[in-house]
Image (cartoon, rainbow, N blue to C red; front, side):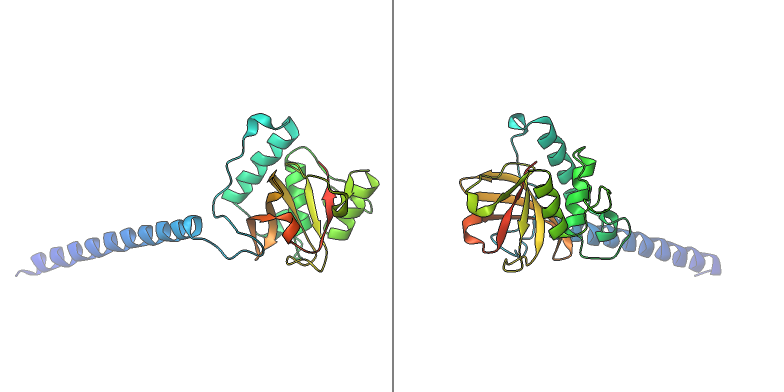
Length: 202
């Protein structure tokens, strides 16, 4: 084999290997995405679906429709906690609720700072109480799409908050931030979860 033929053979081998690496990398990326979307995930309570729920949007009012659209977008392409907390590194469940509400044109107002962002669960409850939109869990209220669930330390979530996407026959589907460090959906029977404090009504 001439030196020229040898060089050509080596170049062809490198091109083939490079193409193989690209194919394997693409396959791995797709495999990771498939795993993320289709593999059942451990739930804090009830179940944690890997796909956004089907919601009949024809029965929603405009505020609910906007909120569901924002929630779906964030579930499909979530940020980390600092996206929702203006760059602050902290527990971010209430930040996520605040951020989604603002994006859906239903911005909250921090009773202490006046900001759209309410970083604490207690302050979030205070906001809803001051606005006349808080209902204790014990009142038997039936949550609606866009309501905010508030949990105390005794709940499996510990002190936490998330948003109701759907509610039917005592079962709620919620979306929340900082659930196992992610944006997650949970579906569960409300009556079976201790430590639910109440609802902030949309």
